[in-house]
Image (cartoon, rainbow over all chains, first blue to last red):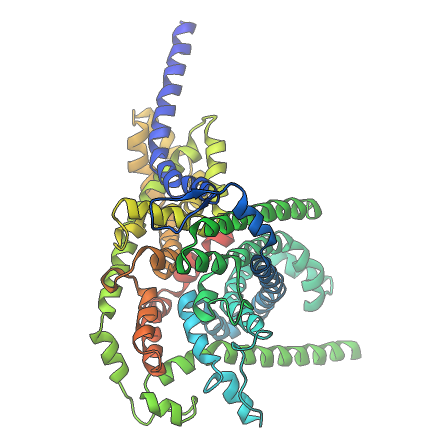
Length: 301
Length: 282
């Protein structure tokens, strides 16, 4: 009798495994074909000299990787990614939090603000890139026009190799701050009304309530917002490719735009794959490292 | 008594300052849109001669007429087709995958779940060249069918992540009852789990839909001819055609932004919730 139930249990287990794999198969196939295999293939191609079109490609060993280590353009691009990352975290998250706090403390009175503030996030990165390439134009752009009202001259933001990167970062923050606003508004709904009531009864002002109660409670949300913003900044592509194409010079070049131009404009796919692989390694290592560090300092949260 | 008065004045002052800053940011948020919409109703030289913030002489619709008579609807149709096919496929297969991950007690489930979710931070650019090569080989290059595979694949991690936790939150009681009645696992999924997952699926439909609708990198790499391109590339192609005609480009931009704006007006809460789904759950 006991043997029979055991056999039945193992039969059920096998049936469960079979059904489970059947349900999981389509997802695993899609990931294998369009994500896992291409990653391996990219590393593979990075050892070749190949123009992407001809069938023949030449195996050149580590040569592309050696070039990558010495490549000033790649270093510049990675540096730009880091600047965007740092400024994104430092601007978008506090701005988003400020907007959410304003709406939360103001209650229903300021609903109009929420609606209008969200509007920039409705457009696609490509459309925003195009829009701002006109809106920031030297002649007849928004900034130039406003500068003229105050007696200044035309402002050439996107043509200046020192200012272009910061202009682009401004646009990125314009696009993503509303996202973090909604994100923190959702986090606020998890803080119960009772905590606020209790703090009020104890005589805390709204300022004290924010700094001493809300901020510590939002720590986990702040952490994942920072990770989100970080990974996003390292992968950035659409907006900059459309708006500046990485220029002027290589002043707004990013890892992704550099890889794209190498591969699909210069048809240097061997080296393009090498840059893509390098970018993949940097992003993976940085996310792992950040998650480890953030988990350590925020272990209590 | 005095200290209460002081703190009251302080609070009013702070609020006034906050509202002023808020109004300023309102302006910052809106100005580019005002620029885009207002100037799209001007003629090419009218915009050059007049300031950008001056109202157009009259409601000039020539730009919109030209854009709509061009290939605009072709782009729109392509986008819609790719969206519907990819989204249906994505939602169905990720719902299937999330069911065993949420419910089956199998040793293999947790490493598979970790693998799928870990794909979330992978940059699409590492797959671009191999996928391009693959599509060339399969003769799918420059066809909208080429976009479906990558769009589905890159929507999988977040969708499985959200749907698995959604299915875990569904009460087991109904399933237990169904099991006693002799309902098999496959029927259980289609009759009970799938219908109960509708709220999660609709949030994901919005999240993934917005991403697919706006996707640029794959569409730009895998398609070439006007007849096979999606809406985000419409601006690109129109820019090639009318590079100096700023009002015309602004009209294209306004039209491409229109579907999202309409959705925002009619289903604001659902849209906002869907667009931030990935982050809020994480």
